[in-house]
Every structure is written in structure tokens, then in C-alpha cells.
Length: 559
Ligand code: ARG
Image (cartoon, rainbow, N blue to C red; front, side, top):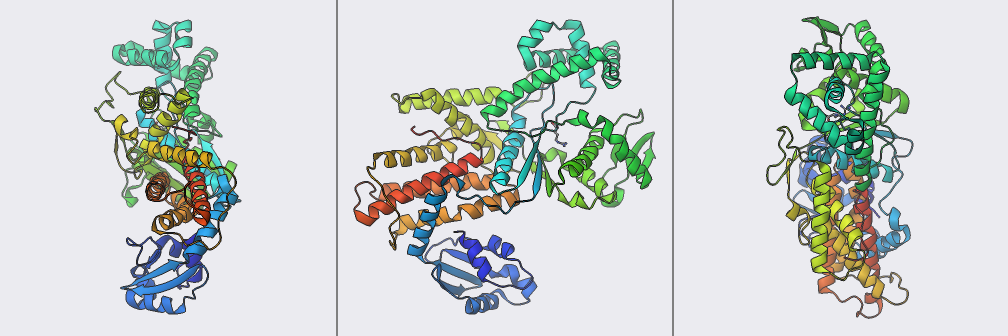
């Protein structure tokens, strides 16, 4: 049961929806006060009353029942107490029955969400700067699916631009088919870096000519371009596989080549296009923004032009309820401009476009430098994390079977979790030691808790069921409340585009379970207590696994 929802539906506040009430309900700092609390100052404005009065009034009209056994109004807060034994059997029975689908729902049914994420650049390094968009987008993809939405994952490839002309020029000069074929993206990147280091005026002109050839459909230029693209995609798909990331579309910038003209025509028709120094722009000064560049003076389209065409295409193709762009905050202005232009074009769905911005990731030793050749490849970060995980596991538990597979799950989990644990807008410094710590706020800690729960369950002989009307002790109650909060947490994470909520939730539940584990006997307990504790253990294991799997992280049986 989702208690916040349950309480919210029993309250009526004019002008405030049950969803909004549920979102305002919090866990009080001290569980003596209650299990849930509604701060009433949030409604003082709509209700034109003091929070203290609001709390009093709501208290009087609230009818307690089998689920919520007590309500009190204290200093403008409405506090609720949950019927503990009722809560316990409800939650545990529900989790044991629902298992892997506990926390899922169908609130999204009939709605489509497009998520533009990872969006790699062809022939450029896939580096640690792409980690956040990839794992935040990947987690949102899974979270929305879990809530019943139809989700379309889009990799808006950076496959358009003069850099491909440069690459062809470099390849023709210094390249070799076998070397590039076997060296893949690294060989391509070397050619590109070499071009940038050595190019003179003549080579730059040659590169422009090759780009023009791609654009005009020249066979050889296009074959080379497609080959570079294929090699890049082969490479990134391996990494996506490791990170449990999937896409439904790889329609990149190039895909919109023939879809921009209708948008440009429409802009003209609606009198939105202006000339400025030979370029075509949409003036956004009235909205406090610099102009949105649509066509350069040589007639070439821009990044924004392709995003306008892409948004229109996605609306027409998927009829999305929302379209999310998981892109670094450095592109804030770009998305504000694109969304504004669409709004000015009269697209009422422009309000459904969301820039899900995130902060920067750097490595502890400051290695994320943009200086040529000093890029940190994401692949290397993943490999290093898996290696380190192996070393730790080998030291802690040398006799473990499947050490290699376990190190994969632990190492990759740590990379993902490290990027997801903080509120997404924060800049983060990635530290191998920190993300791999068994004791910290890490996926390793959560996975270890799962292994502990697994081990308890594997030692239990015979069946067990949730006992009726068992009165849980303090440690057990904390676990139960946390378990009950999971479905609401998944919805909050979706609503705020914050996978970090789920990451934090998993750590919190694991901490509560471990406190219980240390303080209470399980296998040696008697009667109802033993059944209850085994049920609690199994329910915790399901819930932790569900939480991690929404982030793309697997759980080893043993660690
Ligand atoms: N390829 C771009 C970059 O690396 C990100 C693209 C994001 N998506 C979009 N529709 N603009 O900066």
C-alpha cells in the first residue's frame, strides 16, 4: 500500500489535488510524532487560513480506520499514525505476492514519453562526460516503463557537420582500411585529432569539400561516412550492453536533413524569420534571450534547426505526452531557445518538452581535461572499476564462485550508481574508492545487503508465511515503513526526473534492514517472530532488487 496516496485521498483541500497532497506528505524526523506528516503551511495561501487552523480543521474531518489509526494536529502539522500490525501484513503480503513487479503501476498507460539521451557524437570519443546522460536517461527509461508508460528511447546521434569532412580528408591522407577497421573508434579519433593538429588552410578547404560531397550524395564520401558511423555505433553498443541501456531509435541529426525545410517554411510563413548579417534568425530578445540561429549566411543549417525539425517529427510520429532531453546544463540556453521558437510557432505541445539538465562529472585526479588526447574514455572508467571490484572481492572472499561475474555486476553497478546518487544537477567528482566502498552510500553496500538477505533465506528450511496481527518492534517497523514507501518513491522519481531518489531510497532501506539484521535474531527466532522476520527479509530483497534494476544494476546472489 502507498500510504501517502491513501492519506491524500482521505483529505479534501479545495483547489489542491490528491496528487499534490500526497507529494507534500513527508516522513516526520522523529517517529514518536507519527509515521507521516502533512505540513499545512503549504496550503495557507489557497485556504487563506493559518497553518495551525488548517491542521485543526483537517484533523476534525479526518476519519481514522484500520489503516490510519491516529491523527493529531501539532503546530500546523497534521501527523498520522499507521496501524502497525495492519501495515505490516498488508505491505509484506503485497510484496511477496507482487515480487518483481512491486512498485510498478499503470498510471502511464496510454501515454508515450520520448527520452532523448546519451546522444553520442559519431567518430568522437565516448567519454566520461557522457556517463550522466546515458545512465540518467537509461534509468528514466526503465522507471517510466515500470509505471506503465510507453517509452521511446532516442539516441539523437551527432552525425552531422563539417567534422566528417575533416575525417575523410584525414583518412585519405594517412588512413589505412585494415587499421581503421580493427582500431575502430580509437583509430578514427586518432585521425581526427591528427587532422586538428596538422591542418593548414588547404586541408581545411579539402575537408569542406568532402563535407559538401557527403551532403550532395556522393557515393564514396557517403560510404566512408557510413563506415565511420557503423564503427562508432558498434563500439558504443558494447558499452550500452554493459550498462543495460537500450534505444528504440538511433535517428540522429542527419536524419533531419530533409525535414528542416518544412520547418523553415513554416517559420517564414508565420513571420518569425528575420535576417541578421546575412543569417536567418528568430529574434528572442523580447524573452530575454539571444536570437535562435536557423540558417547561417552560407545557407547551412544549425544544431537548433535540426532540433526544431526533430521535435516536430517526434510529435507527429509518437504523439508524445512528454519529450525529455537528458542533456548537460551547458545547453540550457539552446533548449530554452528551441522550446520558445516552437511555442512562437503555435505548437501548444511545446510545454511538454522538458530539458532534464544535469551537472558535470570529473575524475578525482582532475583527469577530465578537454586538452587534445587527454580525454577519459568511459570504457576505461568501467574497466578500471570492474578490475578494482575484482581485487576487493578476491581479498574479502577468495573462495567465492563466479568472482568474475560478480566483479562485473559490482564494478558496473558502482559506475552507474556513482553517477546517479546525487541530485542530477550537481557537479560530481567521481572517485573509484568512494563508489566501490562496502560501507558508504553505494550500490556495493546495497548489493551486499541483498547478498546478506539471500544468505539468510537460503539457510531457512521449509516454508514461511506472513503471520497475522504480529506487532513489529521498532527496527522492524522502520523497515516496514520504508518498504511501504517504495511505490510512491518510484512515482516521485518519475515526476521530478530524479533517479537519485531511487538510489538514495535503496541505501536508506538497506541501512534500515542492516540495523534490524544486527539487532534482531532471524533464523533462531521462534514462532511468529521467525516467520515475520523471514518475510521481512524476502520483501526487502525484492524491493532492493527492484530499486537497483530500475537503475540498470544487477544483484549477485553472493558476495
Ligand atoms: N550530441 C549532443 C552533444 O554531445 C547532444 C544531443 C542532445 N540532444 C538533442 N536533441 N540536442 O552535445
